[in-house]
Length: 491
Image (cartoon, rainbow, N blue to C red; front, side, top):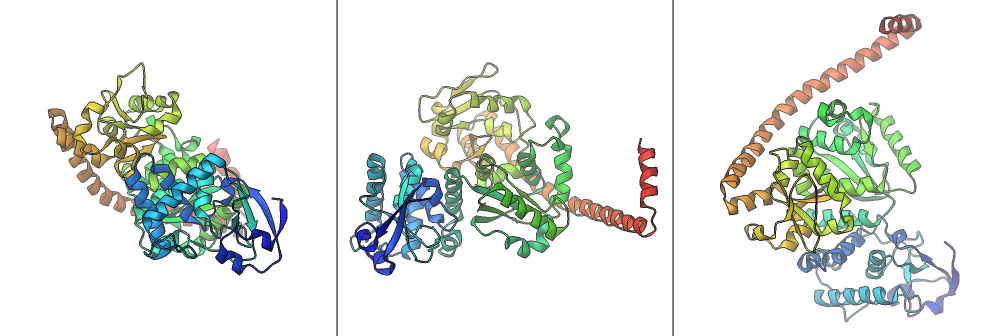
């Protein structure tokens, strides 16, 4: 990060007046940054502004709702910008944001017009609308580093101002869609007693959410996180390794923390992981941290979405392998255009493991045509009336879908409403099955919780017995003898 030196007086008009009045140094360094370098954990508001830019084309009402909560929080409901008397209503805020975005879209970030002021630590002080626009468009940003302290509209800032969790989830997802140095940490229930010590190890927290999974949810999440590992096992064997891992990580089924955070390198992340394991002293069962941004983005869509959490808690996605293989094959189509579609009809029932899908139905906002030689795949627009929801809402609003394997599916609840409205014979049967399925799963949760308690106690007893035996053999100098005998018997 190298640039040129600019005199204080030359910054006048290029940074906000109230910031100019605060700076006292005579010379300042100016330079350009890649857009993703200014997306930092203390600026959760950028995730909300990126969400506005993402949704404004397809769902303007949702976009404005997200942006409303952003600006309401930062102006304490007054919608007046400090140092700008003209910007005094929410409508003006929207107009000004759109104008800023279009200017950068058409002309790039013009350093002759403005510079983005940074704190002494290199974080954005002001100009979040310019920053979000540049990040969204992939434009480099011209910055000036000042001697001023940070400002931190982080995720806690918005929680304290009563922003709904649904909006915070959307902000978190959009943040990790654009940031490259983000990771997800899962603080498993097995390390709950040391939570306060563990959480202190995370400095650059973007978002911290408590989620609650039942035994099926824990199993599905573990499979999703570790499915690339051989020890997990295969779907045809019901993932025996994942079941064992479930017993080790989920000592109970109360809520636990998932932390979205930033780090300079994977090496530093691995050091955090090591420190957490040293604190808990239960091997690899107290924490999981993602390795790649692809994993972060894939899993974030499940855990930062109520429909995704419902899917984890109730689905048996590997039950109908043939349907799953067909869904995976959709990636051979135009992947970029998959974001403009959602799978509809009985496909949701299939990935939940309720019944095989006879065909694959979908809704799309463009002329996307999906194909597969093994099953009929066709648009479902002629059935849209039974959803009683606009197509764009179903496709783009996370309230109506969940994302799995990079594909959107109509949510379980919306599928039920759709079938209940259509009310054909097959729909009546499906609705009855869906109701009994959820009721049965609730009962299974309490049974699983009791079994889990007993299983974990057995694991703890075995571990303590093994440790005590090891210590005894060492004290009596018989460890090597017993180990050699054991190996011979094993062979």
